[in-house]
Each structure stands twice: as C-alpha cells, then as structure tokens.
Length: 167
Image 1 (cartoon, helix red, strand yellow):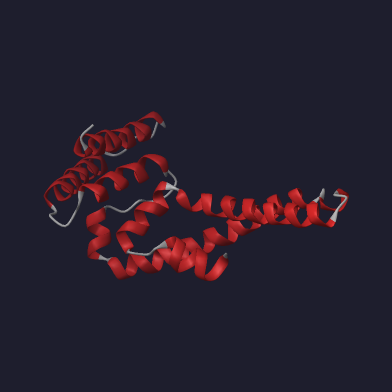
Image 2 (tube, rainbow, N blue to C red):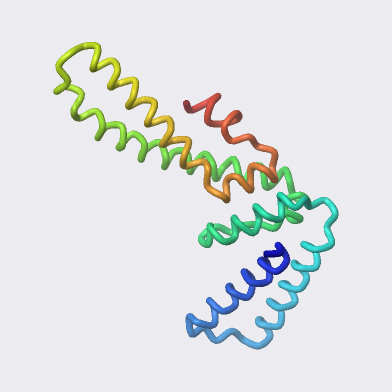
C-alpha cells in the first residue's frame, strides 16, 4: 500500500477511535483537527527531505506505538536537536526498565546454577545465560519506534548507547 494511503488510513483510524469512545468533540475542535490532518498530510507529501525509508518507518511506528506520540519526520527534521534530547531521555528511561526485566530473567535462569554438578558445565551454563541475557536486552531495542527515531535523529542505539555503555 502507498505510504500516503497508509497515513490517511491511520489518521482516519484515530478519528474513528475518538468517535467510538462516545466522545462528543465540539464541531470547532473537529474542524481544527481535520485542518491539522490535511496540513500534516500535505507537508508529508511535499517535503523533499523525506526519503521513502523515513516515510515507511514513520507509518510503522505510528501503527505499532499507539501509546507514544510519534512525531512526523518533517517535525523531527525541523527540531532535530530538541528531538535528539527527548529521544535520549526516552532511551535512558527505557534502558532502566529493560535492565530490571533482563536482570529478573537472568536471576531466574541462574536459580539452577548451584545444581549443576561440574565446574565446566557451570562455566558453560553461565556463559550461555550471559549470551541469552544480552540477546534479550538487545531485542527490546528493535521496536519500530526506536528504529524510526534512531533513523530520524542519527542516534545509533547499538553503538552509542548499548555497546558503549550498557553491554
């Protein structure tokens, strides 16, 4: 499907969700929202800085991250430094949450460590647990929103944050 059509459908879907919640939007607000949607769509279509990859990841991030305010590529390009700072803050909070989950996972896996009979098996098991923990940690950072923001802000999540600081 064409990215423009996907964007139209996503925006229509947001309007329908609001309507389904029995929310009676005032006519003035509804007109304003429709104007904003039209303006955003026009900007999305005419901005020459946007690549097809940016458009694709923006639409994917909107689809898969309903609880996150996904900014349009044009907005991010216009406010790049501000958005970089916001994305770094998001990532540091996210990393803290992920660390807690991965530590719980690792601790659960290590419960059987004392029951392993030989030292060689213990060493091998501990190595495997560490490898699996790293994979699990990295898997959290393959979410579409993170990929999209990484692309838009030129922040390489794996090199800048994960490898250098946390793994």
